[in-house]
Amino acid sequence: KIACLIEPFTVGCRAARRGQPKKGEKAVVFGCGTIGIAAAIAFKFFGIEQVMVCDQSDFRLNIAHNLGFEVCNTKTEDFLKKASSYFGNARSLAGETADIHIILDAAGAETILKIFMEYGKIESRFVSVAVNNSLRQLDLLHMTYAQKSIIGSGGYMPEDVNDVLSIMSCGKWEIEKIITDEYKIDDLNAAII
Image 1 (spheres, rainbow, N blue to C red):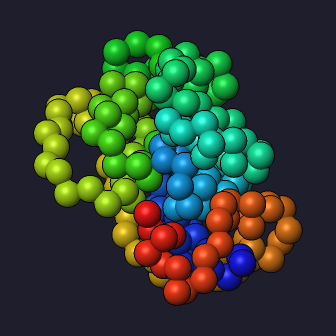
Image 2: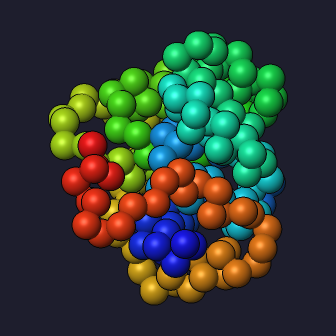
């Protein structure tokens, strides 16, 4: 079961690595699908202890919570309030905000980049791994003064495969719990629906 997750986990691991995580930093992952959960686990593997996973599905958030992550339903909860309570506070160009070093987008909703631009602290980083081809406008002056970074991530590299194999064999996370259903190959159409 776990072997079927290797490929999406390598994509999530690559995205977390692209965020340049350092021990003692704090991260938020938007999107609680397989790649989002993989990125959250990779952040912890890379030494980030405080990781919050955000989504609008309580079903998905429950899976992340059971894996040991702080969760936030952005449909029913105030993200900034929850994040500030969990991470503490820091400075942004607009004033006080949540102390988050890395925001990773594994969902692709337009609002996620807006959250980073509005609430991202000085020197924070945004990683986009979500498949999203819509054009966005950026306030480059804000990016310059706030010294923020926007980083793209797609695919994976050999080191990501090696790290995922370590993650999957260390026994720290019950990764197989993110598998919600199983289908035979002949039932592929039913699985997609």
